[in-house]
Amino acid sequence: MPKTTPKTTTSPAAPFTDATLRTAQELVVDSYGSVWTGPSGEESSGEAVARHLDATVTLLDKDGWSRVHTYNRDRDQSSEANPADDESMTVKQMVRALLRFIHEDIDLDPRRTLDTALRHVGENGVDGDTDTDRVAGYVLDRLIQAHTGSPSARATAWSERQHRTHADITALLHAGARFARTYGPALAPGRAA
Image 1 (cartoon, rainbow, N blue to C red):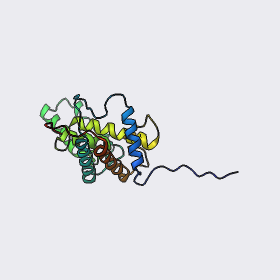
Image 2 (image 1 turned 30 degrees about the vertical axis):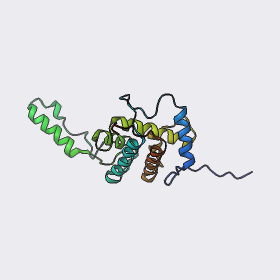
Image 3 (image 1 turned 30 degrees about the horizontal axis):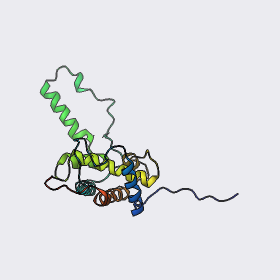
Image 4 (image 1 turned 120 degrees about the vertical axis):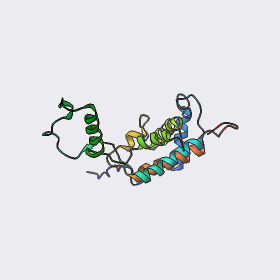
């Protein structure tokens, strides 16, 4: 019986080669609609998208990366009384109890997923906006499609696989920035990024 080598997953730091970027560009050309146009209907320059992706790397390096985001409670709540059922509480007391719960009882993990980091950079407005957030997502999707060979692959789902690492995500983001600078539209004269 012949030996077969098991297919390995792509890690550490998934290799996004120039050939992968060229294949992604072919996918962009074949895409229905412009990958470089965001929800506003306006085109984002390659440099603007690259700046958004670079800022996302910086944010993930600062706050940390998490494969998935969950809100955890750190103790068993089954025996505690529910303040919402206490009719003797004033509205002010209920609001305080709610704020105390949010502040103390929920484990707020500062780490971010790929999706939440991209969105945060867009919402922050310094290195991107909601258009560059969406366009960056389109670019990363095409890179993952080129990387995996699957036309239905999406960057967010790829980033959430159990074996994925922070290095894999930053490699994807760096490749996305490289792709945007190489293949993205130039900034039109007299237009903001």
